[in-house]
Image (cartoon, rainbow, N blue to C red; front, side):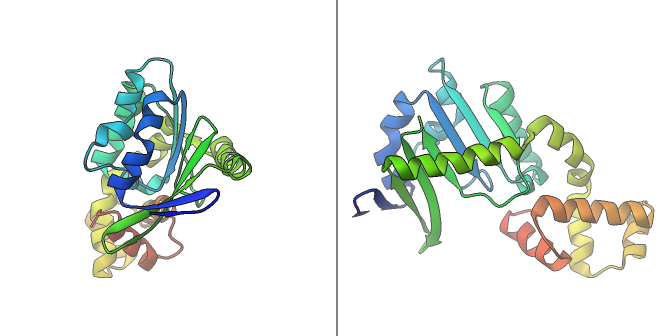
Length: 218
């Protein structure tokens, strides 16, 4: 662990859990931004970062922003819907780049860092001015994000075809051939590919394949 005046750098989920567990036990407002469900997963005690545990405490507001690529995985999409429907988490989806963050009661922020040697680093921030700045960024992302139900309805058809489309893209199949295999018109197929790229935050088909592998979709 490395400590500065306003920032404490911790390494790995176990150390992060040791420093933040008491906050999950007492916070009344938890805001979270993540690219996928894996960033804030605590392998030792995953329930501390789950909306179910927070909702059992009663009057706790939980807001979560995710990137849309996570919704392409049916299992992840169901987990997010469960957090909303059963545990009262407010969830929105953004196509913009986000800082993977957790904010407790607007008093403390945790920023996820890079993964090195199999462990992710986290910056625990307590300086009020810095926390305020991080909170402002989250609130701006929250305002511009789309409600989970609305975005999920848009992406449902893309999710259904995603594995087959990704496989055809990996094979280098021409649009006409891929559309014929899927029983779609060429224009419809291209719209599905465009929707898939948008959900993955990819600017090219190659980049879409790379991002899909990162998310474990292929």
